[in-house]
Length: 280
Image (cartoon, rainbow, N blue to C red):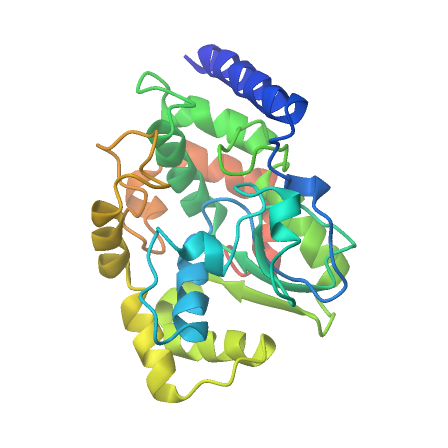
């Protein structure tokens, strides 16, 4: 049950403490932020990995991007040491799931309907075994709404979806150094949204390069890469019977999320969901 999950969380916290004690702690919110850093932020399971592939395939058009080298191209602040990240050429483009951090001066923020985020998060936690099959979606949803879900990739408390996303919207929405991209819009017209992203990141790309990046970063392509890269993240030390790249669709909650759960989300987070046009 969900109570057993908390025991798992405690074990993971002990492991993080061990890494800190022996100088091998991944950096997370303690990152040394440089003035020209650019951050790709999102709440977990909102399309951050897909967006990383899109940008990497755009920026390194002559290379084959996969799960073995994505960390070198657009590093995750939870998978790397601060000292190693400081050795990267600047400006650095870094992946983050953090809530508002005023040190982040230039931010590309990906948001996704929280009803889809909840479903994706549920299977993510099953894959990485922070919950087991006995935990129902309804029980998981209670913790998700409360912001009490531990995401292996994040390693730090990041709040609920509404807390996390709302912190960025409230403080930065009208900032020219802040670009908001909805996952749903990225799915609907990937090339158009990737053009917006390339302009924001000042990547000079032709239409042909953008189309190639879109093709190379498709869900089918990423699923194939996931199968090929079985000995690296996200398949290393996780369940192989659950894919990291799942349906990769928008609106899957309509068929797969219990009505009571979606109603709870809409009631709890109606202000933020309305601001993002997820509900009327």
